[in-house]
Image (cartoon, rainbow, N blue to C red; front, side, top):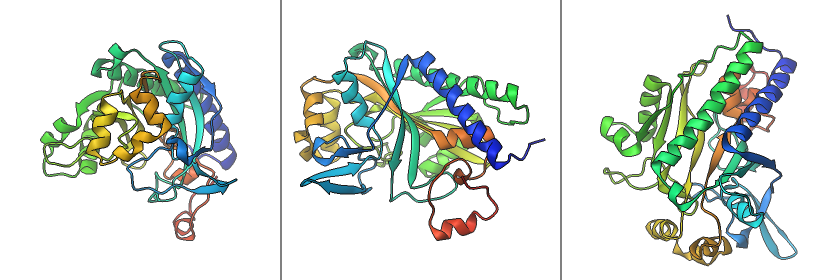
Amino acid sequence: MKKELSYLETIKMIAEVKKHFESQLEKRLALTKVGCPLFVKTSSGLQDGLTGVEKSVGFIKTDEEFEIVHSLAKWKREALGKYDFPMHTGLYTDMKAIRKDEVVDDIHSMYVEQWDWEKVITKEDRSIDYLKETVRSIYKALRQTIIVMKQKYPFIAVNLPKTIFFITSQELEDLYPDKTSKEREDLITREKKAVFIIGIGDKLKSGKPHDLRSPDYDDWSLDGDLLVYDKTIDKAIELSSMGIRVDEKSILSQLEKSDALDKISFPYHQKIIQKQLPYTIGGGIGQSRVLMLILGKRHIAEVQASSWETSTLETLKDYQIL
């Protein structure tokens, strides 16, 4: 029988989950925790464009424009090169971001907290096999964290399969051709419980992408989303968006497909084209969703200290809000 957690119990368990999961990430991916910026200079090209339509929160200081980050997808790769991280090691951060255009619901808020990570790889590592190997490591980190927490708190009810199921976005579209991408995600995740969908950003046979991706960090043929079935809220949730990053060829191809070749002049983009940055793999892992899954929470407001619109607060009267 599930135990109803008090406010203080929830706070303490949040800290424990984060501690154990970070330890697993460090061990399984050879990562070092570092500090990170809350905002970047607009002219640097380091802002994560997400789907390309979201507007950042910004300000001007001494006639220069700055933007609060959406994520650190590009900053991490530049940091790995700047600090000369050894091959097959990397960094992760406790990232905070603001996405003011986010549609707020039970698993989305305007305030983003995620483990943003990045790792140096070789040119030869840029393959589906290496992507799958890395996904399995992250999934094992999640399962091990759940095992540790359940040993201490037996009332935790989450159960995930030992292995994660891989499928390409095209295979998924072929399987459910009459469904939307989100409906396809929910159907396959309900069946398999833990799924990684490979190849997000490029157009499928239908002429539509499975989902939108910024063209200048993930390689659309070598990226994907990790989803699990959350029994408490009875739906599929995306825990991580990640992938092998663009190289000097794929960045040009994807910018052209996205009609965004004007970005080529940014310092970050030039460094990739001129091979001045390391080849990397990286992504973000949603802290609040991991916490919701493990602690059996029904709304992100139960595990995240954020601010909410009045209309959202009305729906949260029965929840313990952090």
